[in-house]
Image 1 (tube, rainbow, N blue to C red):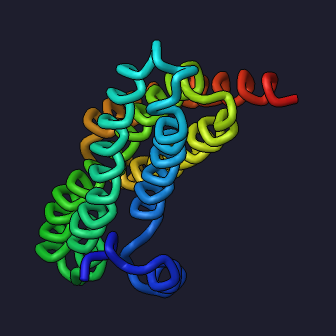
Image 2: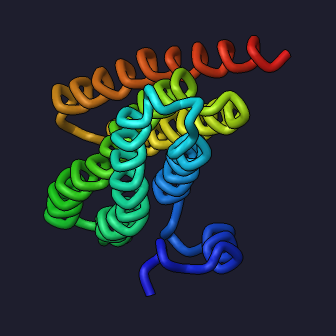
Length: 209
């Protein structure tokens, strides 16, 4: 059974265990999928309502995008586990001789770069989700505004959590040029889309109070 198809109690149980996977990356992908689904809920409560007939096409477009994004984020739970397992094994390679140290360093560098890819992709998907929730909040049913705000909050958390799974690996890279490039990309995603999530949340909160 893949990690993403486990029941919620089973997923939580294995997440809490000493198993190397799932970890922070998989949890971030799941949190992101939940955030997108909350935005999608707004769409479901808006579609077909006469009051929102003028935005029906937009809502349908957003729901299709959300359906796709939810699936992609759930898929990334398993991808993160697949990418991390070789790295967890590489940490256990022997390093008693100079030859072993050199080989371990070589393997680690490859595995670290592979382990960075999925959490960075999770960050990008969360950024997409935040944009979608922003539009749901602006165009969707006012009765479901809180769900759009909950969605961006979940996605912001997932964005930040995934970034830590990027940074913990870039820190160990020998290729500092590559590490700096990835760190810059991650920081830009946090700055831009974290701020957007905060804006959507503040706007919704202002309308609810």
